[in-house]
Image: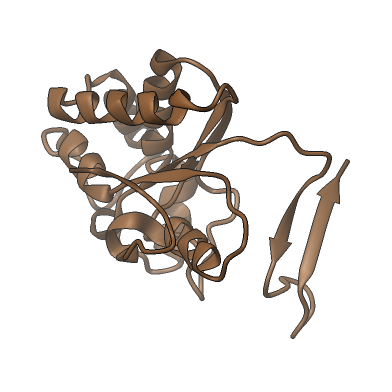
Length: 196
């Protein structure tokens, strides 16, 4: 299995679930309300990329674009596609709201490198075909030239980490924002930005 429903009893390894999923599960354990979510482990990503012959060093802008194109154009493995379809049916069973696909790489939300804004997330997904398309785009974002340079600058190996993903139910909200539990600008402060 590559896709797991996350609840307060889940045991996640951030090296395969990514740190975003790992941290969301910690919030769930504390009893806070988090919209229903599933994590797609890095194993699915690694399986998808295994025959693509991706270099690990000296990656040019053109190389990055070609890698991304290969990831998006490659068909998903049949077993994973079935698992994804069953997960999508589970999410939609009691939910007419759109869903989101969010990056959750083991190479993001680190103490020394947050990767904020480097990878992709997609909102308002309402069909299975769109989910498949956005999932591959999220995986491909790991190989954008910007993310490659970011990892190199922060001494994060490209092939060791990969990309896990979160599939999450969206909720109607009056406000939307970002909470930094460690402020990027002020020491020992929480930083919150939002819009109505």
